[in-house]
Image 1 (tube, rainbow, N blue to C red):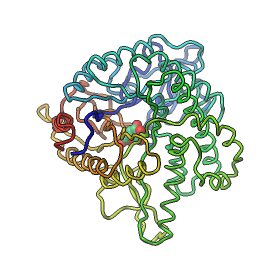
Image 2 (tube, rainbow, N blue to C red):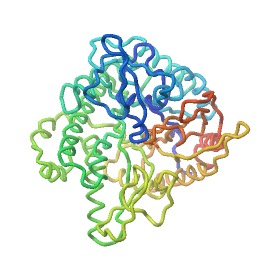
Image 3 (cartoon, helix red, strand yellow):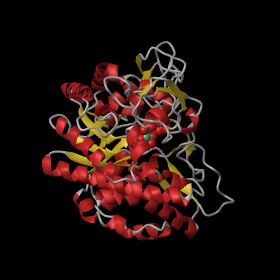
Image 4 (cartoon, helix red, strand yellow):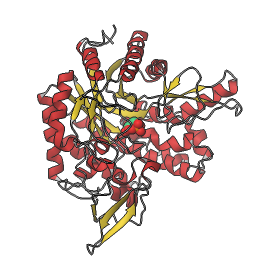
Length: 489
Ligand code: BGP
């Protein structure tokens, strides 16, 4: 057993999938109030009231700039929209935190809904009721000996900013920074661990994995991403200058690419994917500068290097203290069209790996890949590392108030073993917060059916259920891992 004695064992969530209370106490509309679940949501509709108070219907998952975002939104009873209620952490945080404590968790990852603090994103003063909610949650966590790990922005930009301004406009950098500064100042007595953006490299996901993705869109993504890097660096710099005790982190989607064959062309193709998609972002946030491959990428998309280089000093000053990432699966890259079988599932758009198995959603389960990427990150950055998302999305069945989920326990076992081995390899791993520790709304499907939790929530895809929490078998399993600090997994 190699886990250090002060290892963080926790669980992870995000406001837009967990919290609910979407229109309560002054919260404004967020991007994710409209877009969750991509194609799964195309038949859902939202109603908003226009300036004259007349109801208007819009199709969700399409955030059109024609929708006025400074209006009131309403959902009619027959228009259930999953993120709006999440699993009601907004009203049940005490109950959930009590379960976390019972499990022995000493860290809890959550995010702050930007539009709960600044409803449109552009206001001068923050929404006091929004601030009070998170203060109550953080105080409750502290009372229970649980360290909050806070993602400042997890996919839920205020809808007004997303549709009327956008990350391509540097104004958004200032709006984000105002939000980040507000919450860091407000909770500096309660929160020490902060992540600036969830999976910042997800902005490149479509360009990296969708064949023939329009170049123009990729170009825009690189511009928007750069502005996010600047916003992140400003935030980290401010935190370091103002609160030296803060630990600031990046958060990168850890999709690992392997070459499908030993053809050197495949090796190069896989390396390029990792450079363009993973290290490109990891380097800016952890080394404070773009990697050498950037020049080639910018040239490929006709981007002016000066746009990126003008912020070099700030990026250097905004280096993070801890490298955090999500890890679910690996995928294969090949130049051999004949041997490539399409992967299924939204994160597995490469070729299928015959040596691993796949989840019901086509995500490749590969614990060795975790050990592999942990070693790579260690070698490249020499920073403390946390795995802030990991887990198996599966169909669970509640029967006689019990959920038997041996498949999830199996998943935990091999991934925790991989962590143990990686620590022995020399990796400075300091924490693990598996995803959706309480069942919550899936980001890719927008539904409840894809569950990750060790705590079951009685809620179905149509929003029916008591919202009651039940401990799954994996709850006891994980509690024992924590109790023995990873000796028994
Ligand atoms: C990550 C996101 C999370 C979470 C997770 C699982 O990419 O940061 O928000 O949802 O993936 O994804 P899904 O819910 O689609 O299974």
